[in-house]
Length: 68
Image (cartoon, rainbow, N blue to C red):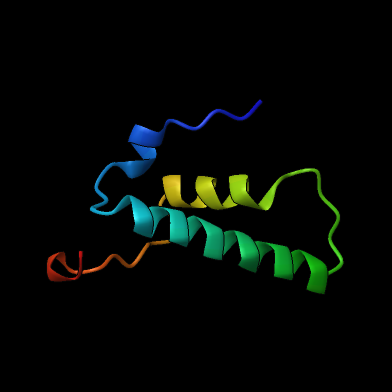
């Protein structure tokens, strides 16, 4: 079972909303990439996206303070 430490994932982020949106957008991109390349995998796109964010492989754009 894949366990995610939310506090660790949220570290350095201002907005939980930005984190959730970023993970979901990246998961959709991964899903589309798998479909385009006809890749079959047991791994879930959401977990892959979370790992990429946790390992700083991708960066999230967060709203400015005045936009919150």
